[in-house]
Length: 413
Image (cartoon, rainbow, N blue to C red; front, side, top):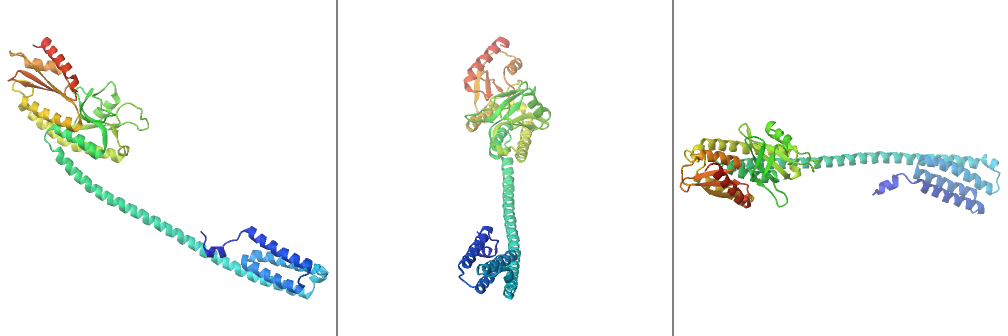
């Protein structure tokens, strides 16, 4: 909204000025036609009119008013019966013209100086307004930066607390328990929704699902094969780099993100993410994921090395099979995994004849029948083989049990 000052000193519309000229002209034409006033009074009114136009609109319109007033004076004198040529040379016309010029120029010049002063003040006000707005923007930006820095400080404190919590949670000693905690950490601290940790087969041609988090709408495949994803395997296992599918092609096959999990210098596990909050798929988000996997990899490597050292204690003496106590420990871990992540597992037993048996030959046969991640234990007191199949639904346990029993009867017993 324009202020009162800008209404008084601001530029007027041209059509308003023309209407005023026309109205005043019609008045003088009417007065001349009916001889309402004498020539002396008309001259006075013209002088007042020129003064008003000059003081209102400035030097430009005051010049127009001077010329316009002189013409109206001659027109009025002609209508009164005077000869315009003689009237032009009379002293009264000379005095009128001189007064008209002086009054018009003085009033117009005064008004123009006021306009120029107003323009100076107006532009100064505009500059101050712009500086004020810029100062406001700067202050707003400073406040936003200050709030952002506060958030960064809080975030750093939170990250330090998270790192401390992650370190404590991963200090579980057993590799399977560490993987359980890794799933929870990746979900809570990275926002992954559908993902899993896969075990890399000794041939490096197959990834087997070890532990995962799925939803009712989406699930993790039980295996990934080299033949189906050669570039993916090369990227993660050979180049040992993180892989991310292009977001521009959502219909492309394969997972969204794959990242290697090191145990020492070897990629023993692979994190596969199918669904995650998109704001995490940024450079900062991927860097956060890499750091999480580093925190997972170190205690996992340490646990696997310790388990390898204690491997003889986990085996039944003189056999390649795990002990019943190890079976009980692993069963408890997978029961927890079932409760926390709704991940299935299957167990069954196969009784062997109570006679001398070549257990090493049986083990080699079973290794060809089962996956590398499956657990086989031997109970000498009951003469039974105990099987624990992670990730295998219980509906398939009877079929696998029957197949293994037939294989043992045909091949080793």
